[in-house]
Length: 98
Image 1 (cartoon, rainbow, N blue to C red):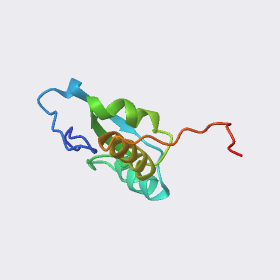
Image 2: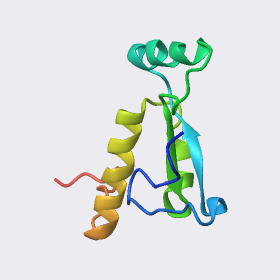
Image 3: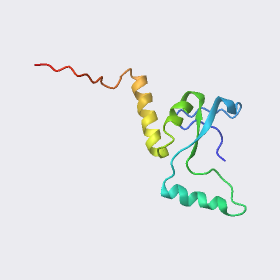
Image 4: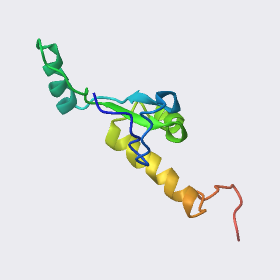
């Protein structure tokens, strides 16, 4: 099993595992094939599709658990980027300029 280190920011929370959590994302075909290895006796490791997130990123990650990790990671990082530079998605209105 991978140690609890956030996939987004790299924060290591091994000393206090309650400072984050493990999120299971939608599996790709490759993930499914890899995880079949765990059915074999004596095989150990970290299951595909399961990723650690610190407290700051855990809720965001949970919101995207219906997506693959690649899709979810892109969306989480996009939100982080928008937050850091102070941009927000454009507001859509029904106002029309003549």
